[in-house]
Amino acid sequence: MDELAAEGEEVYRGLTEHTPGFIDYFYEVTPVQEIGLLNIGSRPSHRKKGDRSLSSVRAIGWVFAWGQSRHALPTWYGMGGAIERWRGTDPARLAKLQTMYREWPFFRTLLSNAQMALYKADMSVAADYAKLCQDPEAGGRIFQLIRQRHERAVLQILHVADVPSLLNETPELAISLAHRTPYLDPLNHIQAVLLRKLRESEGEGDCPWLEPLLRSINAIAAGMRNTG
Image (cartoon, rainbow, N blue to C red; front, side, top):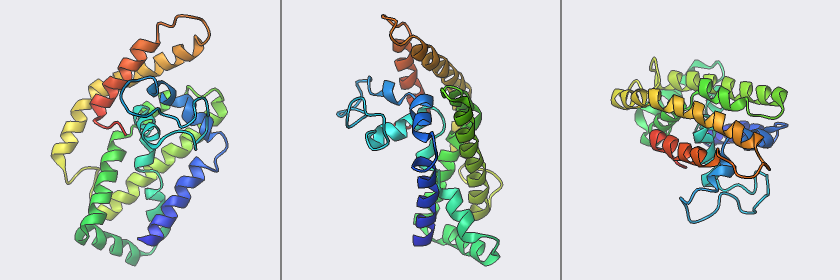
């Protein structure tokens, strides 16, 4: 488990700390700055107002913002890479992970929660948000990296759980989440459009896009049932 944790942290930090353009991507493709305008918490979304950096954004704002844009990145990123690196092509290591999943409640709960997070993350919806990046080349490059990691994380966790699809062992949850999709996807599309219009109208005086955008944040949080 220590080895898996170290591998997962390295993969996660590789994206968040060592990928050129990642911080700009975060601020441009999520509503993290607008979340700070909502009256929903005891503390602001940033430690230092106006500081556009990873160290300034608070943990709740970080998780909440990624959830809104359907990346849900902090909840799963690094996990698939950790499993993939540790097991390699060794069938004995895969068998060990499968035994851990069957017999160790902590590990089973960890991967079960990851399955739910991967299910809620939707790369086809996240692609709409990725287009908000001011640098299209950087936005496309970073999104493809995240999308590929998502696909590989799903594959690795399915191998360990030895199931054909995410949430196969919790069909009631799968049905509940599937029923929300027809409502959430249009809300996400509306939010991405509002974010674009809001940013294009900066400095133009009264803005008609902010209030509906804030409402969309509340609506998506209610549908996702995750706020951070």
